[in-house]
Image (tube, rainbow, N blue to C red; front, side, top):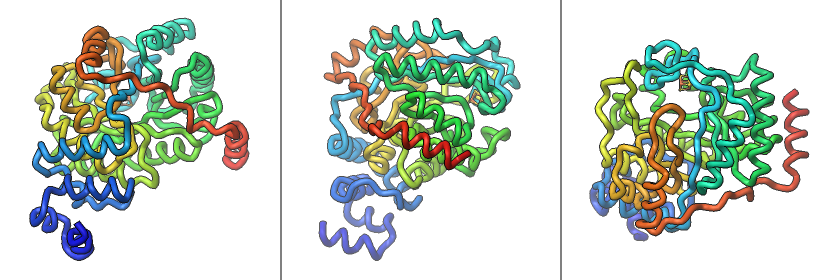
Length: 371
Ligand code: SF4
């Protein structure tokens, strides 16, 4: 391996891997010895992604065991607290007001209904509660935003981690969410920078990255991933992982979604993603972002238990539970319970270790410096 390491400095990764072993093997070994890094080249990530699938699966599993308790799987419940009527044109989304999907726009859910859903999720074993609102951003929505802050506070007091996905946010709003007790903010990059304009035209890739920066600066955990099956090339999948893995800090959560094509959206005729494509994404994400929670997200409902087992083996350690994922169907609760039992998985306890005792002071400092 010493020989491999010294050669690594001088020759192109693809040559190195083909001469000795797969890129998944070499890079997993390097990740385990040297830890996470964010100076990945796109070529390095492509070589991992292109490794023989069983090798990628095996080495994803090795990194998973090095960085996490491999039996623990985080259970998150995602509730759409404000459904439909969104001004954006994300081509995969039934909530866009531009597409005729038969979805009725609704107002922000009231507190009692949200708390009831959170309690139900907690009783079902969920440790993180995520609230999604179909908004472009939160600008001009002070009353609704203040209501969400209240929901965050109360759910946090129930002993759950809390996450929100409310569209683009400013730094000040991220700080207010943090102060209310929010654990993480979700804002997906969706796909590669190059393919992005084929999917969304109403907001730019850079605007998405700006929101992630505001979230990070406010001291919140970043949850950001993407969707496969949008008609993108494999190169775009690599591009998405490259952007995420070269952020100044890796996202704490990386959801990997498989498109569930919805009738009425421009992507209604996309063919379903195959399990092997998910495994490639999950195994590669696990090797290049070892500490992240890699979430097997939308589209899980289409995969059998053995197929999901392969995803957990490759490095996935988080799922969404509950009947629905925003507006699309999700796995049945009893089927998930049975899967945990069959695979020997255990629910991951909530973690508040990132919340230092000086959190409030740090938030106040951030508010002062931003205002
Ligand atoms: S993905 Fe979000 S921002 Fe895009 S249309 Fe749907 S609700 Fe709106």
